[in-house]
Length: 264
Image (cartoon, helix red, strand yellow):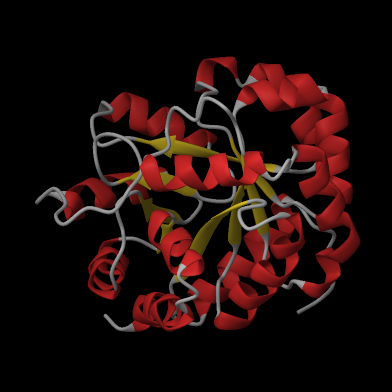
């Protein structure tokens, strides 16, 4: 792959190449600093080598409104070891070149404001971050960060829910960069046994409006889930199950999840 500066363009190239090879996109989510800050880079390297297309890193935060119990507990463990946003960015800046996969940071607005919007975007770019997910930033308020995000070339990934109207879906899909994050359940993150029956129709609509890949997320915890979701979506994001498997040192399950993405 040609060398490209990290950011929105790099993620786009990696995702396009993956889909052009008739493969699906797999994005594992980890909580930054769960297990201590020294575990961050080795975990990213393991997931990269296991075949993750991109990796999402959660920033520990005291009020994680979109997160289910597993991710909340992981954030609590990270905070208890004293992990900060600055430490995560510093670690990435030191070791980013050892990880090939695009890196996406999931954070709430408050840590970005505390850090300083322009400073955060500058440091994120220099640390090799390619995209951002900010679940408590509504589309209407994107202007708070737009200028800085554009200046430093980061992708802002939008989340779209099952209950959004067609007009709202169209607005969100057309605004999303990197990929469109399609929430497959109503509620917070966490493993589920079942999903809505009409997901195929929902994903058809999303793909009609979206110029970027559409990835399914929330509740995906088994290889069967990955397989069924990648029949209707361009890929998946898996969070709670990755965190549980990492905590249990069960890389076999992580490999099974990643390998399931191309077994339609």
